[in-house]
Length: 295
Image (cartoon, rainbow, N blue to C red; front, side):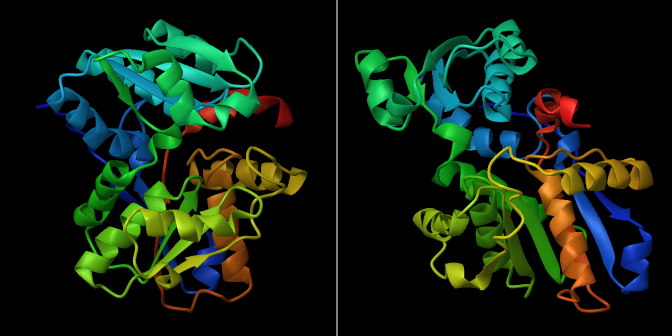
């Protein structure tokens, strides 16, 4: 059975803002899991890849945008564990460093217009309905198996935290954390920072993944900075300040918005003095390659 050893420590961040408000902040460094299968990407791929192996599939078929960390992680994981990989890329044909890395790892790419991309099942069936080798993995790894992988984060923690934060795209990592914390019944308050505009739908998405009481998850919908992969000068300045003060690299699409949200919530006194906070660093740092011109 597919096996992948990794180490993901918890690291305390000490910043004047945290000390001033009497709050201890720790980071679950999932960005250190692997250079390309990093963060929540490995956690979301672990069980789907085991299922593909069990079904004797040889080809992983998945989906993503032109700068998709998920596409890159799948390409690298395929190379590591002996699968061929195929990626449907949303939008017009482009050539960029992330897609080039996907190809170096052996992934075959097909660009599809945004209209056809919306129906991923139809895309898969059109090209692979007659294939006995192909295994479908949804965009971003979304699915119950992926959520189960993310739930394992909570088993690795060295202490009980008052609050746990993660950035949200599909909601899979948030759903996994909710499942894990519910099992442990620690009383930890779970916070999701959606990176898409109008992302209230994430509550419905995590219910699809087994979260019966999604109202227990606090969603903070005002930190998207205009939408997915959108940014503003204040976010860029925050990321530079944060990196220079902590040596921890974050990026504008996910983790930059995550840590900005925590800072803002502390300033607004939404996190009580004396709290311990866990921030889940979900990796995805190759996303910086497409946004360096903003720095």
